[in-house]
Length: 170
Image 1 (tube, rainbow, N blue to C red):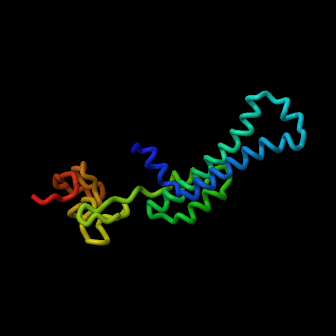
Image 2: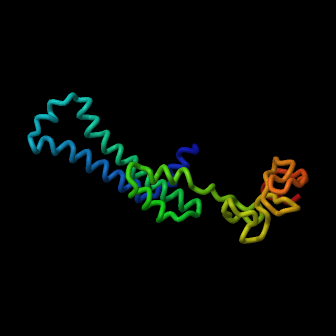
Image 3: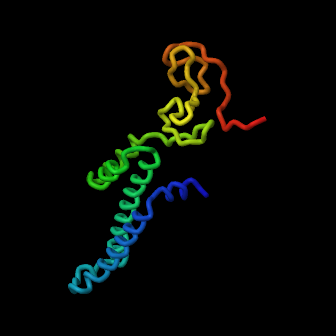
């Protein structure tokens, strides 16, 4: 499974149903309405413009609803306030709420290498078992990166650390 299909699976099924229903309903409406009103202006438009109007606008709304669904599912997956972000994405005009979500969203949660539970990325220790989820400075206790030679917060020399992973019994 590619990363794109994994990300698409985050979108809730309800969002897919609503987006598909809106797309089909708008395409049908935009096909029937000009004929029912005997609008000659639409009939005189080139075929490419007619297709752009009848298929393009509903496709834009389909993508917008799918993006709002993605914001909902992704915020839920990241442990964020998903109802608030869904409402912001839906009601702030010009997709600014969606763009804002992508700018300020939290990183994906990590798995604790000790107990396997999901742990928010900002946590240094697992709230379930107490194991360290990332290395800390022995002097000041701040989280540090595995590749750092010195602590960025206090300047202390860091011991050489290995890459964490699931502990396998020997």
